[in-house]
Length: 144
Image 1 (tube, rainbow, N blue to C red):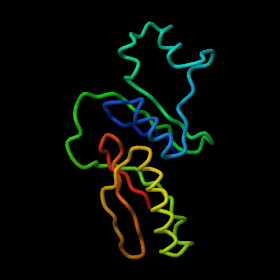
Image 2 (cartoon, rainbow, N blue to C red):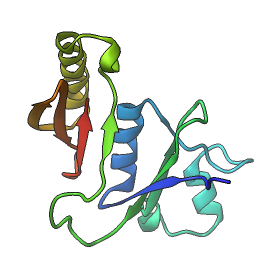
Image 3 (cartoon, one colour):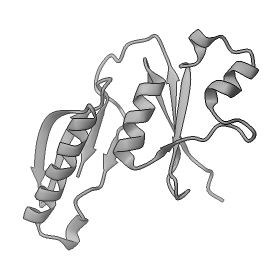
């Protein structure tokens, strides 16, 4: 039996990065616990000091198919290239021509730039095409 998977990001601003990835991946912010209208109401009732409210955030696939993605606040800076990254599969894959895939990737990249991503570089090899992007905290991810 396979285990469920959660992806975890260490970051400076969990609320900001979770909002970025919710938009980027067509996810949604995780709902607050049952009986609470907001996370703020829940945290307040739990006695969590307001300065700690941005210590974590999570997003979920609204269709329940993708993994939960959790963002936890860490004071340590990002030191180098990610050892793990997310690929956003926006191109339609090999069932469409390379030129069509490039167009779809570039369209998605433009949407992500508006959300706060930065274009890092493009790659093309053996019929594959991708663009490496940086999220608002400098983590690499690819659009392919």
